[in-house]
Image 1 (cartoon, rainbow, N blue to C red):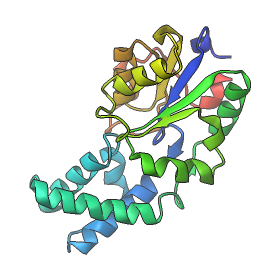
Image 2 (cartoon, one colour; image 1 turned 180 degrees about the vertical axis):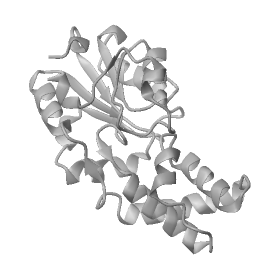
Image 3 (cartoon, one colour; image 1 turned 120 degrees about the horizontal axis):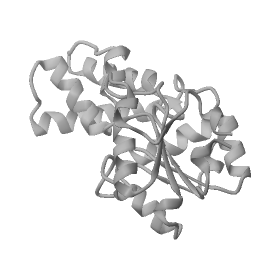
Image 4 (cartoon, helix red, strand yellow; image 1 turned 90 degrees about the vertical axis):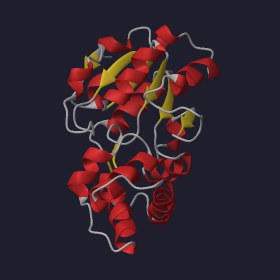
Length: 221
């Protein structure tokens, strides 16, 4: 086992950019919703830099790009509803599991650690994505961006998981691909581990000073 796992009993994983590459499906939904409004598509490359703060923020960034200015609340709410409609129709057909993820989750679960998921993605989309890869059985509890009033980088979701399983924060690890994951983990008192291949708004996740970095989650086991 990787040294970062010493005395760790609960592991919280981010989803998008950590376990799966979901940007192709997110970009398709973004562009479909823009097309409904007669606006130009954003494209996958731009969306890759916009994800990580939940669907509302993604749509806000999308409209700001397409219109050249910040949208009003009404326009943003309508665009967000359209995005959720399109994404809900097909949240996973283009989404891919990153190499090493399945092997890591299998081994960590067999090692009697509690595995949890904490993402800023709306909760309704978590199960469809995990199910298509047969991963839902690995996680004892999943939290979406709308499961609590707060979401990452606020530490509240991580503290909620630790309290739910009656686990001291010193025995918990946050695994993610962005500064929001590392900031949330650090604020919660969790150990932090980063992967460099995900979405971090165009900046190296190493700059967030995680406690450890692995090129693949397979390195954990």
